[in-house]
Image 1: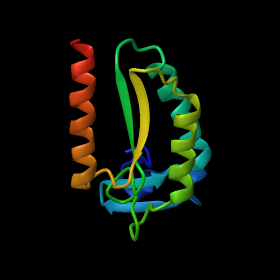
Image 2 (image 1 turned 45 degrees about the horizontal axis):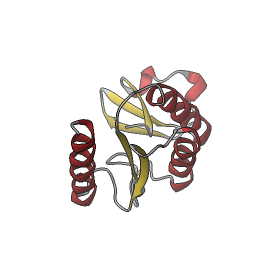
Image 3 (image 1 turned 180 degrees about the vertical axis):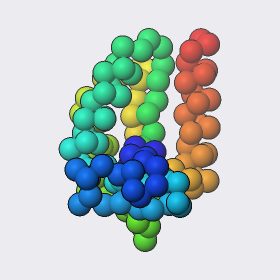
Image 4 (image 1 turned 60 degrees about the vertical axis):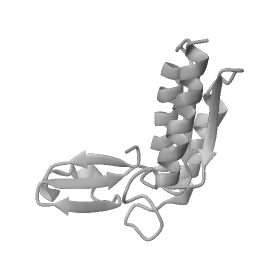
Length: 130
């Protein structure tokens, strides 16, 4: 889940992050929402790694949420932050005939996203074995 940073109990969150959007999941876990800028940086890190990979590759982006709590009506719902992540991934990922990136109109836990993952895997697997 790229939308959050995990800490222990609320008392373990550094003071520097006190003003950030926090979600107390339980007594042992407090989550902090990542910002748009942090997500752009994470996207660049990911694409630096993936751009060095050989072979077929597909990245799927769940437009309606990257975690259970990053979807409409949930504590970390932030379409602007998701867009920052997705736009940076799209801008920095090197696509080719066998390397693609696409958005899926679902959240990461939606069966429609799971179906898209299976279909993408089958296509990548076939390309890798041809």
